[in-house]
Amino acid sequence: MLFEMIFGGVVLVYIIQMFIFYLGTKKRFPVLEEKDLPTASVIVAARNEEDAIIRCLEGLEKLEYPENKLQIILVDDKSTDKTYELIKNFIEGKPRFLLIQSGTEHGDLKGKTNALANGLDVATGEIIFTTDADCVPHPKWAKTIASYYTEGVGVVNGFTAQVSDSNFTGMQHLDFIMLLSVAAGTINYQWPMSCIGNNMSYLRKAYDEVGGYENLPFSITEDSNLLLAIDRLKKYKLVYPVLKESVVMSLPCYDWKTLIRQKRRWGIGGLNSPVKGFIVMSFGFLAHLGLFISPFFFSPLTIGIILTKIFTDFLFLFGTLKRLGLVSTLKYFLAFEIYYTLYVFLLPFFVIPSQQVVWKERKF
Image (cartoon, rainbow, N blue to C red; front, side, top):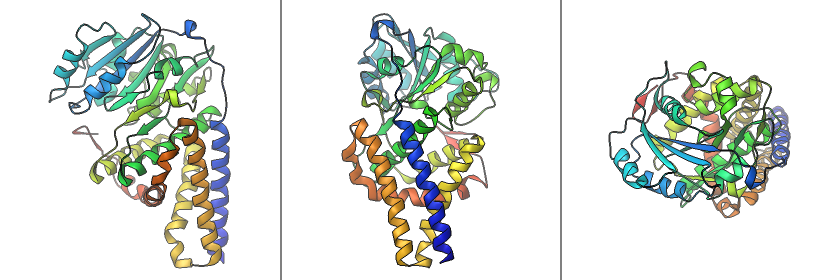
């Protein structure tokens, strides 16, 4: 009975947290008319992306935005394959696009963060967008996100979904939606914990005020690092709309080795979370720990607690997926729930012993 009481109490706190986050995702914010949209620069850092880059470029080419207000910067991050040549050939004769190479070293910056800093050197937009070379944005992505830059807004994020055609890819997609729904809820309360850089935007003025990436401690999750730095200025609002027009479609990891490396990288980046982030993660960990060991304390009450927790996850995902037009992907929910339980429980054991990660053939 003691286990059931503790497990039930943890799950109750977990449910309350999820309900609060869900209410956060429902918040609404004023928007600009299309004629008032600011100038914008989209920056994509690409390293050895020859298999995905054309798909990304075709998506970027379809972006809808007022004439002469959008700049698209491709930064080749020292690729050793045909990425640079493919981009160069694709953008020929297309004035919206600009291709550069990340030749300039910005202080102690490494890898993708240094490539983004190179892109920012030539960016002219009032708003900076970032996405990845394996992503395809919705055609209305840029103008939808930019419309939220009313007076005082410093950061606007959007949702990333993943191409899903199996239980393995579908569980990753639902994991993205789960994590980003929590991020959206907390950000809309102005309690930011994290975000994702493949669907991020920020006011260039706010970026300059924090001193740029060069002035921030290096982090493998440069996106969340910048988000928290802008929040610490305490002068800008943070916005995270839940709209299908603001979705970016990403490619999933296609093998376990790559997926584990991704999760380790995110987990190590999460070590820089604020205290409230660790509180949220702690109850998530404890709830999944309870699920993991519940077979040793089998009882009708334990089963009821487990089902309540699982149903909470289902409803939380359903609320976001419905607004994103992706409800059909709930067919992967069972695979997701098994995966989610295992990795939330196991992640600390992968992260705590070593903070070294391998990313894009580089060690950090």
